[in-house]
Every structure is written in structure tokens, then in C-alpha cells.
Length: 350
Ligand SMILES: Nc1ncnc2c1ncn2[C@@H]1O[C@H](COP(=O)(O)OP(=O)(O)OP(=O)(O)O)[C@@H](O)[C@H]1O
Image (cartoon, rainbow, N blue to C red; front, side):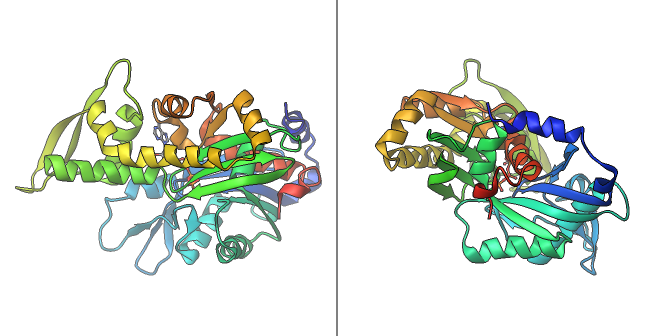
């Protein structure tokens, strides 16, 4: 077990009065969700990565409140998701979002952010890294450290990343799927596929449009995916009713949908994720392959919750596949553990 898991608890109990003047935070700035870990506190925020702006482009809501407005706005308000495919697509709004989220978790009005650890997809360019760093600095951080998402996920699920043992992490997020083999505090091999849960939602929207002449929104697609979506056949198939707008006569309609329909809708994207994993296995050095054979593949990220995704990967690769405990928070827990002991983790941050 990673030594830091117990350290985090110990340090949480050791918060001195001086620390209240500052907020040191770790952020999992995700395409779908942003999570913040505060030093000595643990996870203090977990909200959708979305901002509602007025006509003057000033934020009127961030996170949960903005999500409630999404796809229900009028001409004076628009909602923006500033991240696409795991990277910042709209810098200005991203900064406003980070600032808004930090404001929500500040303990005291006068506290300022001293250290900030932010995780980023392993495949992003130097320019994209710079953009994240700049946004974090503009949002008030005095010192910014970046960590690759799969590394943070590995630490978050309690692996000792310093060991000379290979671990394969697959983090299926909203915008990206990160596949990485980690050993000796470094990423031996990484592939970042710009495809995640958002794409599956789009697949479901397109499926309804093509096959049922029904227009459904992003939130409805997400609900369908989470409730009855699956990567491989279920022991007991599921079904539900869904509402949308009939594309032929323009009126609201209810349609019945089964888990088999949804599986068909998302199958191409799911297969692309699984193929990327098999390709990554082919490129893993043999000694590390042996470790992966023993330890299996570790699934994290919200996409790991897609029913039977683990089963499909297991059947395709013939390897053990484990879903991390609470996969949606693995990355921020790891980023938080790094924040709690920057010295111990100095080799994994930059
Ligand atoms: N039960 C579920 N079944 C299927 N997908 C789910 C489930 N729960 C959450 N998800 C999906 O997980 C994704 C969000 O995961 P996560 O918060 O790890 O991503 P992120 O960190 O925001 O994205 P990225 O890492 O790509 O920037 C969303 O696409 C969401 O729809």
C-alpha cells in the first residue's frame, strides 16, 4: 500500500493556525467534472466543469448551478464547458471557472492560494500545458505544479509508483481515455485517446436522431448511458422511457429504449477504447508485460462505471481487470496525495 495514504490522514489532523491564511489545493480539472482537494481537508468540491455567463460574459453560475441551466437557457444566458477532449478550449472561461470553484472552497475571505497541483492528460502539447499553468496562475496560484493524469490516478488508488513494478492504468474520462504503464515514478508508455464519455453521449444522441427521429439533449443522453448503457451484454437487459422532440412533427415524444439499443449506439466508440488498450499492451516492454499479467489492468475515471466495460476488456485481453474503488475521485485523491507531500513526489511533478 502506498505510504502516503496514511500520511494524508496524519497531515489532515496537523493543520496549524498559519495554514488557515493559505489554501493549498490540488485540482482535477476535467472535461466533465472538476474536483478540488484542499491540503489538510480532503476533497472539498466535486462539480461539473461548466459556467453560465451573462451577455457581458460575466459568470452568473459555476458548477452544479450552471449545469442545471445547461440546454435550458435564453438569449441573455449561455452555458459554456471550457474543456474539450481533456484540454482547455476556452481559456478565459476556464480561468473564470477555476476562480469560481476556488472561491466556493475558500475557508476565509482573506486566504490566498499558495501551492496548486493540477493534473493534465499525458498526451497534451507543451502549448496546452502552458495554457493550464497560465490559467491556474491567473486564477491566483502562486506556485503551480503539473502532474500527468494516469500518474495521479495510480497514486490515488494506492499504488506505490516508485517501485520497479509495472502497472497499467486506464482512465476513462469525459473527453479522454488515458492508457499508461507506470513504473519507477515515471510513465514508461502512455497513450491519450481523445475519446471518452462525452463521445458516448453524442453516439446516443445520434442513434435517437437516426433511428427514432427523436432529438434528445446531452443531459438525457448522459442519463440513458449511466442508467442502462453497457459495453457487453448484461445478465438481465435493462430498459427505460426517454423524452425528446419528434423531428418529424416537432412535438415532445416519449420513446422506449433498451440496453441492447444503447450498446449498439456506443459500440464503435467502446471498441475504439478497447482497441487502444490492446495496442498499448503490444507496445509495452516484455518485463513490464509480465507485471501486468500478474497485476492486471486498473480502470479509473467515470467511464470505468460503464456496465461491463471491465468484462469486455477482460474478454478481449485475457488479463485481469480491476475497477478502482470510487473511480471518479481516484485522480483528485492522487493529486491531493502529491500536494500533501510534494517532496516525496517531486519526481512525478513538473
Ligand atoms: N455510471 C456511469 N456509466 C457510464 N459513464 C459514467 C457513469 N458515471 C459517470 N460516467 C461518465 O464519466 C465521465 C466523467 O468522468 P471523469 O469525471 O473521470 O472525467 P473528467 O476527468 O471530467 O474528464 P477528462 O479526464 O477526460 O478530462 C462522464 O462522461 C460521465 O458520463
